[in-house]
Image (cartoon, rainbow, N blue to C red):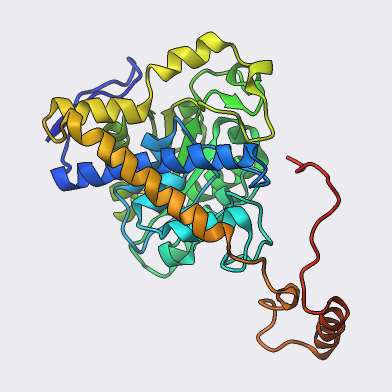
Length: 367
């Protein structure tokens, strides 16, 4: 049993979080692996070996903590900084890294953007770039579960900026009216690309929006992984028992750029970054485990090295995988390919000699 304290003084309470020691170590490993993936992903993009990357550094705690209470048959409707949730659920690293390359092993065959994972084996619905689309998908899926009298739960993650969009309103209102088993998890990382929270809405507390929809709202320190575990566990249990949806606002910070195409130094003061660096969720959890004698100082570096090596090996494997075959442009749409597409496929493959044409445009990645 470990005591944690959620962030806001208005709703702070000491809670006892029941997490076994072996699961604490597994949580630490997933968070460390997510950080290592970010470090190599950003480095490879800067070297020109990847076209694009979206880092999640600083949000590993909320990603892993929010996935912890979920069952294997629950459904995840993620935003693009929740890779820690996929790692917690045990996804094979190659499933993630192949997406970064869009190679022949990528389950989307290069048709989706990098860092927009689609992982059906862990009920991880495809990430979308348009903001908020996953919210209405989660609300609809939750209602379907309810109609089918299942006790499964749908969870959707989104950023603070997305709470200003129409899909947020639609999803929240729909789920609240039907008391659908859905958890709405807001990653309030203070910035919607270059727009600060103060310019997004008239309230500092996004959780207050839950009141207007008639559902409970909980504000939690998103950099305290165990606090996130507790509030998420309560929300999931409530949804599973038929109590309806919950809105969770997790306070965190995006330590890096919005994406590899962004320069946060143009709009974000260094002092703010330095302040939040002292609240790093991975360092905080690591120090907690040492203090509670779950880990020792000497064990930290080998874990970090092991995670870095796992990531490096996956990148090395995927860097040598060829691009998707040319005919995959025409597959995965119909169970039986129509004659006109078969003719087009055969013509293109014959014209190109079965080879994928290399991109020689020299254009920069659009985002």
